[in-house]
Structures are given as structure tokens and as C-alpha cells.
Image (tube, rainbow, N blue to C red; front, top):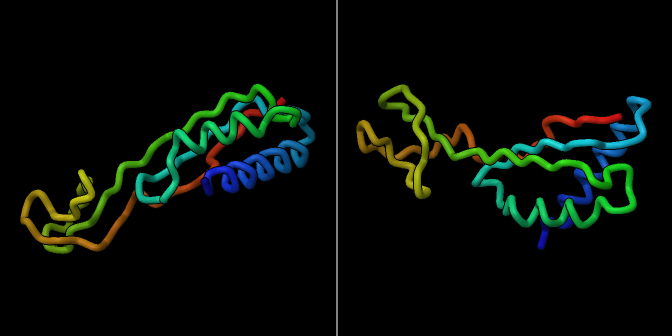
Length: 113
């Protein structure tokens, strides 16, 4: 489960930033995870909830925002959601390999005290 390693890196970043800001506790972490990132959001949430015990992030709220894949169609000059991992433009039927969203794996905000 590589989510455990990702959770540990996320926790390390959150604690370091909390200390950098002169705070002592992490109250909330907000992450953005793309469906194409290779990370299972539920597994990441579980891993984070498990490893925060005994750290400045113990009891922190963990919010994970999922990002649906989106592609860009060069023929229609428009972006479309890639539903069911289909990268075919719903307007013209052309395939697209220009993925614009869905690979994210970001710690986007912290709430500290």
C-alpha cells in the first residue's frame, strides 16, 4: 500500500509547515487527489488517520477532494471530462491524449493553531 508512504510524506510536510508558521497543532489538512494519480483516496485517508496519532496532527480533520480526469480536444478546442476512462471527445468522437486534470496529488491547505 503505497498510500502509507504518501501519507507519511504528507504528514511530514504538514508538521514542518506548522512549525515554520510558529504553530503547534495541525487542525485540518485538505488534499486534492486526481483519479489518475494512482492513489486510492480512501486508503490515503485511512493511512493518514492512522499515522497522525501522537503527532501535532492528532485529531486533525482530513478532507480529500477528488479530481475527475479531463482531456482537451484539439479538433473542437474544448475540454471534456473523461468518464469511465474514455478519452474520446463526446462532441466529435476524436481520441485525446492531452490530459488536463486528474493526475493531481496535492496538499492544498492546512489549518493550524
